[in-house]
Image (cartoon, rainbow, N blue to C red; front, side):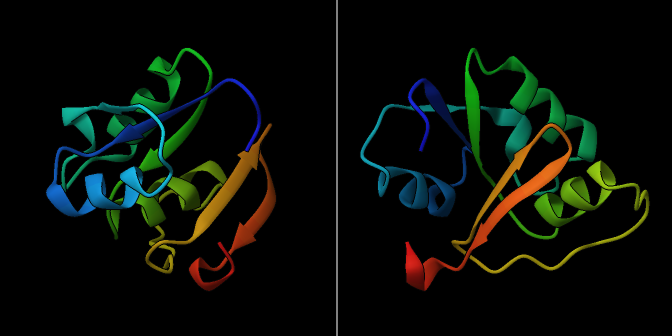
Length: 100
């Protein structure tokens, strides 16, 4: 991961367990709780002081990623524990959890 990133996680216990695997400081954002809207997720990312690593839930994250790529009402399926690197409206990488 790039230097200067911030991990932002849902207050749900399972999301925090996933975030703790990164072994860095985690900021809990109540806006990322299960059922978060696209605006909640994008807002949480925007509030990060640096590059944001968002740890949340499906289908919420799939809807947010689909929205970023012009699929307003789509629900993209994301694999649990996978990493999506999105920068400047481009998907730079999608990494399966078994490769992390």
